[in-house]
Length: 265
Image (cartoon, rainbow, N blue to C red; front, side, top):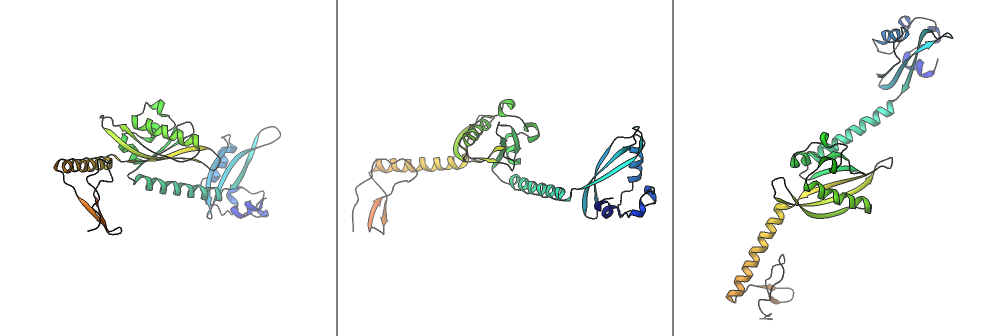
């Protein structure tokens, strides 16, 4: 009789030779007797996870055979798997925190294995492209016949995997309705605890920002052209150098100088 048996069953040597129902037992397993009887009667080996006294065990009930191969009893084994179940619980909690965080991010996010098979899509990704992780899991973009946006992001994924370093880039894609979208993506290669390679990425839609910048740039260019046509200009006074300078846009390509520096007043 092992020490673990004594602890989890509460058995003592005096209990040997008695029926299961007649032995005091600290286990709260109301169906244990029926499970043992079922195995002895010819049922299959039983493996079940049970929890007792704030510990988790993997219980196995196997038939005990005599020399003739007849079932004459059952062998019960209990393996303490408490550390494993706690580690699994921590892993699930960490994954849930990650999922909640990413699902509330306005950025799209994804993870693929080294062969380009999808293993994670954020909810924002799903909503943005009208797809679902369960439909994409384990499949490549080629197998899915994915969109222009996904293909553009996968090219950056391959670059990151080949370089072994994060890749940051900006590119244009087409929405299903034909509209151009501008994405800023960061693609990050990484390995898990056993050395398997993956690539994850985050994509931010920069379309509206770029459109606003382009609009501002065009307006400033129109103002410069109007000043050129009117032979007028706007100057800024630089306090550090005590001089005035023509005001030019820093967002737009430089055009002809509006006029010479006037120097000190």
